[in-house]
Image 1 (cartoon, one colour):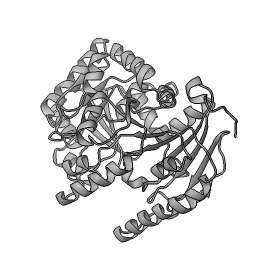
Image 2: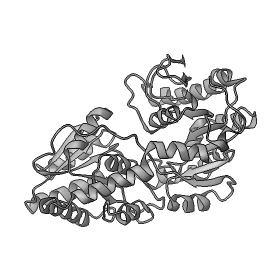
Image 3: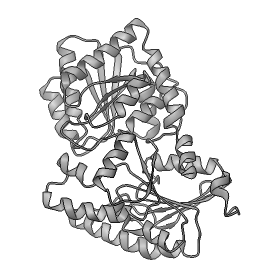
Amino acid sequence: MRSHSAKTLSEGLPVKILLVTANFAAPGINPWLLDDLVSALADDGHDVDVVVHSPTAPRPTGLAVAERPGVRVFSVGAVVAPSSAAHKLASYLSTGFRLHTAGWKFLRGSRYDLCIYPSIATFSYGFPGRVRRAGIAKRLLFVMWDFFPVHQLEIGRIRVPGLAGPLRSIERAAISPADVLAVMSPANEAFMRGYHPQLNGEYTVIPPWASAPAPASAPKNDRFTVMFGGQLAKGRGVDTLLLAAALLQQESAEVDVVVAGAGPDESSLKDLASRLQLTNVTFTGQLDRAAYRSQLGRVHAGIAVTVPGVSVPSFPSKIIEYCANSLPVIVSVEPTSDAGYLIEARDAGIVAPAGDERQLADAIARLASEHAAGTLHARGEAARRLFDTEFSVKVAARRMVEA
């Protein structure tokens, strides 16, 4: 490991960072936001240790073979995927136990300038707080992407209202040791302050991020094409997108829709597309990152769509990938979110209300008209500028170290 002085955080010199996460790449596991973050931190000269505690994505336990200098990855998570609900519960419990035993043994005696951990905080099992209290990490930064459990309750993923209070208290306890709370947007900060008023950490706004993709090598599709990329699950609003596609088909619009992703609602969404007799929608299934970005290179715009009737302001991370690929963005999210405002304010796309298939169809048709007129490229250029200044992983990594 590189040596560094105690003042490196303020001087901008290399620091030593710990990441505690359930999501990190491995054979068969796609790279994710946190993989990009670790790469960016390493590129800036920082040492990074990653402790992975996934109870569901199997990988070998222990220290992995180093793939790049300055980065170590240690896993305490599951070695086989759970095959039943009971097996899944047992895997969560055993993973938490190994985090506090094998994971603690791995870190004991180490010292870090910064420890980072993302939501959902409950499933970090109190480990980051223990690291902070023991003085292993000087600063603790929590990354808020998912307001648990209120969002899961509002979209129906958790169906026992009586769990709201206890789960909220557990989540708050897991967040409370953090010195810095990184939220995705100003609306997220306002919601967080109201939802967890007892928290005393400093707030900083760090939107979701991505690494810059390689230049597109394939030509654009002949017909104007929009793409949704993400998990097909409750709260995603893909059914609204299919209804909008039906309206466009009825109006003989020269538009295609690509739905990239998989999830528990995939079969029901395909059934809906079949009942609507959609010929302008293609489901690609789950794609690895290279294939996903290749698809993005062939389409003309990206769609971020959620559901109405929720209080939590979301900031779909797919927006960042669209901007990275110089794609205009249609943002159809709940009115509490400020994601659409940011996109429209930078002329990088347009907004439609969540749950309104008519206005979503009109937004798609509007971008198709701009494409036909040869003016859509300006929105794509604005989207890429927004990525470079706000959404690049390099920007996020430096903001975390500065925080």
